[in-house]
Image (cartoon, rainbow, N blue to C red; front, side):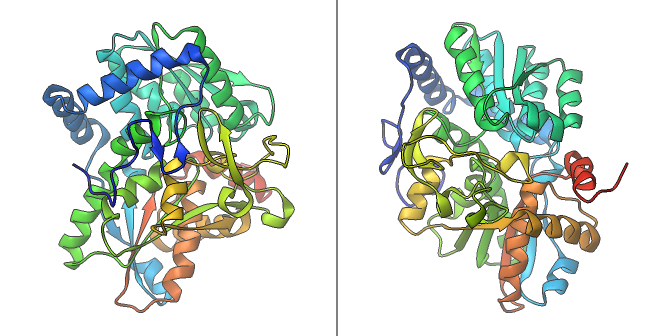
Length: 400
């Protein structure tokens, strides 16, 4: 049993007033089948033994908890530790969930898996899981994200996946999810949809959280071994919210400050951002009730972030619940702040972070500088920045 302040979600998939299952009737049997399978195999020794072996020998877990000595010295404040999810196979935390869902799909008798992706890391992780499990794989990706993440597109195709370009709407993650849901509705008998984050209809927010909570369980043990006490603060970026809830979940019963960092884009007043808690309101979107960037008529607003993985109009329902009960604080970092943190970590520690993770680094540097030198911060370094180097060079006007 993982640690939590209250058993959530309830049997209908609600975290307080958030979450639930708002989908067409054609998808209800698939979601019920998935919920039953998850409940069964999450207690099945054979499934859990296979997953744990793959975590160790394939993903490379446990990932290190690294004391960022130079970055800590730079801030002249708290000791900063980095949970090194960037060292996972495929380069990000996404593999924790994708491998588990691929194993689940096999046990459900599915022949094909599909997924959406923004930054491409979930697509690569799902394609990896499909290759390992011998499943067909199709990845939906917006054309704007394909432009930003061409390296990951090639990696997915190299792994045997079909990458389908989505040219509608904003041509980003929101639209890729819409197309994936349409596919699933049509092919539900032989296809499993590997949702990449703690969003969507029940049981996805619960299931993805549980598969990602290995991050926090490890970090908790590692910091107790390294420092003989719990950290003062946890920080992670928040797009859909899986890497952050993965870190936070194991600490929810503890007196530890937790900060989720959304994408501030060009600033809240500009309207070009993806900070749902700073500029959103309650709505129903892509299968669940959560905070959503929308206008007064309920139309979904366009979003912007320098990081493709945070460029999304809504956020996982458990995050909304945890905000309401004051367990987690939410803030945002702008594109400029994230780019500055991207370069800072690279130069101080020799670690190039994903642009998503750089949002967490930006906030961590701010917070650390206000704390004493015996304070402890853990930042979840959710992914590595190889995928973002070309885009950062383009933004800075550097020709490669």
